[in-house]
Length: 69
Image 1 (spheres, rainbow, N blue to C red):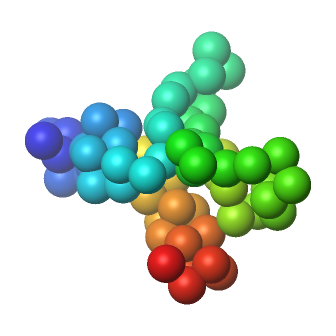
Image 2: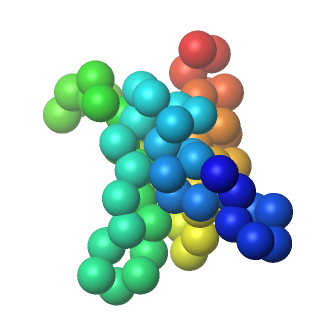
């Protein structure tokens, strides 16, 4: 469910992108990593970081576009 201001929550982003594992670090930053990522995969296509869930969603979409999923 989106937050009160209409932006997605981290749970919303996770639900919309099940191929990614999303979490918030103690620093407050949001991170996501492809669940099927291999150590040899380019990091910019398998791991993204953002200050908030809305931007994290956009970063995931950008990474997916790079790999033409």
